[in-house]
Amino acid sequence: MNDLLKKMLGAHGGLERWQTIRKISADFSPSGIALVARGQEAFTKMSTRVDVDTRAQRVSIFPFIHLNQRARYEPYRTLVESSDGRVLEKLERPRASFGNSAAGAKWSANQLAYFIGCALWTYFTLPFSLVGHGVIVRQGELWTESAEEIWQTLELTFPEAYATHSSQQTIYIDASGLIRRHDYSLEIAGNSKAAHYLLDYQVFDGFAFPTKRRIFLRDERRPLKDRLVIQADLGNYELTY
Image (cartoon, rainbow, N blue to C red; front, side):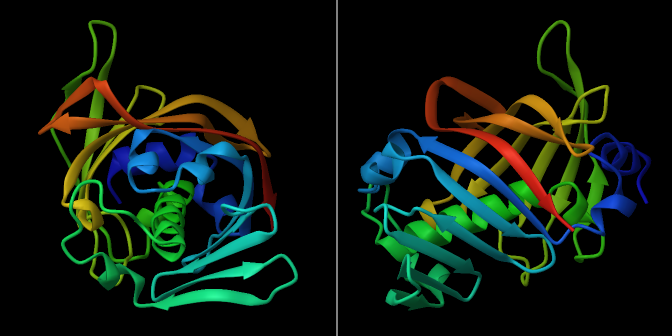
């Protein structure tokens, strides 16, 4: 295993303890022009509670768009249901539904569920999901974030079976071993390039999680700090063993 990956796993809570976790729950409050442009402004006006299964790519989001609705995500199916469990709508093979989605094309509720679920499963399970899922990890070049901060990088290649934003991604790790930035292209939205910053880490039951996420457009590796497209605040993380 790559030495930097070992350091990162330890900084986030340790692989051995991670393997005992079944679910991560957290409060999640998203907003941003990218969601509004997709016709999902209502989703940005409420705080939700998300449950992320750490052992399979499953996520639930409640409330979802409306106070009495829940969304459930799996890579090959999404559904929206009422709070009492009645299925209101569902979508098989949701990723294929995006096609060559143009910038600003409106998303259905199930497409939003796919985007949010896919994103949160990736974010909540990193860096631990880099072990044992067929992800190729290669150490990349150093990155100078500022005069005070130089970050190491890992270049990631995800297998086709792993539902995530794009097959090629980069994570940036600070001196303590924490992930501070995550670059990817959003394949379901015209391969738009994102620089995703992880901020204000807090420790919950021995695991380090960011409580703020800020996503900017980028030009190759340079983040466009005047182009903030999504922001999310998180808290009250709870781990289920």
